Image (tube, rainbow, N blue to C red):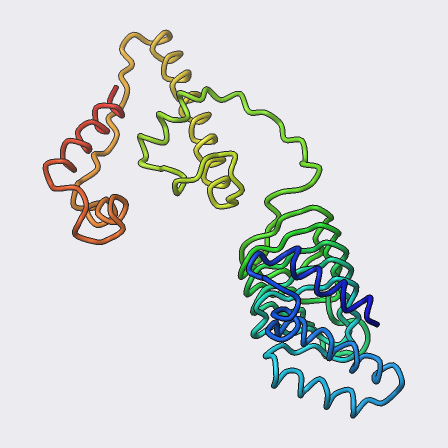
Length: 287
């Protein structure tokens, strides 16, 4: 018993740089208090003292702001940082060395009895406000980003972000086919359409930015194919002339340019600046 308590306190020192001494952790960390009370209520639950177990669990929630159902299985060196608003369901299973932050929910999506809540394997880290819902497994060493909503199984070592949760990193990344895209041409396309990938580079794990980059790569390929077709037509028919693309009017894009430049309507480019940009884009299209 005392060995487990020492393990739990040492796990706080390992994962919270704000922890200063043994007494402070023992008396002022609600995550530790919730864990100790859960161990007692879980023992009662297994001894079929259901009412006493639920009553102790309710008292623990009132005391710490953390709700752990007495039926949940918690491993060793479990750490809840801050903890307010954490909810762990009855059939949840948590492995060793798992870390949860405030507002995390390990919930169910079914009213049927049986396994309804997730299983977290060893070393999982779940960010503040994340919701993991359903009877699936989050693999060892996985990381769940803050406020993510996860409803499907997560492989070991993966990082999941977003709503719904998307895997943005794996321990063993999938091999992607390399595209034959000229980086300079890609950058020119980005500049032409005013896209800056939300300030995120291609190698950063942002699924929206990656999707937009894939669209730009596709547009780049289409642009090149159209240029080759026009060049072939000019060779076949000397009288062939490229058609003029419709002009883009400044007033159609004024508000978008304002928000794109400053994030605040009315504080973006001035009218002369927008006119010069539109003229440059028109020359690029006509050429």
